[in-house]
Length: 299
Image 1 (cartoon, helix red, strand yellow):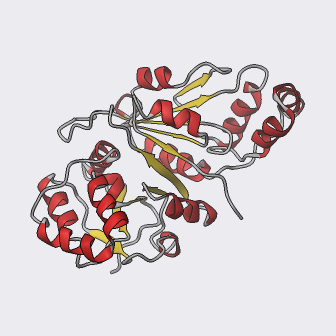
Image 2 (image 1 turned 180 degrees about the vertical axis):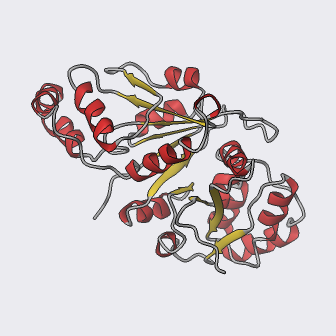
């Protein structure tokens, strides 16, 4: 019987998000595909260093313990099968439970995301993430930063995922008003529409899936904790709270910051990943916690 992915949290991750492949990427960009292939063959037994998303992926595997099979991690890479041996050797070295892959030899990844029932796609390639967002898949561009230490032996007891609100969990409807008309118009619009739930954004389905996973565990042993970290403040907070209530979605912690810098809050929360649509927030956050930028839909 074929494996069904419909009832799993399916995370697609690129090799550059999982491992540190910046040097290899430089070789590809500066010397071309042939040089990249030769380099990977020569070094296929050299173990790769963990990348920004490595601790999150390692922690997600723990959700499959105690007889539960809740998560499926799939490598989705522009590598070819021929250049993938180093990736799989590194996966084996670190004991990651990843056995499935989509290796597209430089082709687009987006057409396969729905086929794999992907709930979340993480990549360092902006074009791939943009195509995923345009295909209605929750996706983020991993923001690597040299100041952020990555420990392959880190034992994460509780996964902590933080989200921005507008243009991430919720649609960009209100964000567009803020950008075009300013803060006062935004606040007035949200006050008037406080009783009207916001439309779903690209990460709404993922948040709902995480909420369902949380319900699989006793209250005192839930292995995932979520946070909303938004620049909204009162009176724009009410519409957010009523929207989450209407969706029957659990958010464990909420921070309505009203312009306060987000990065220190994210560090205090202990975020293992933070999703935001604005570079100004992901750049500062990525110095302290793993972060990913969510692009706007282009179609």
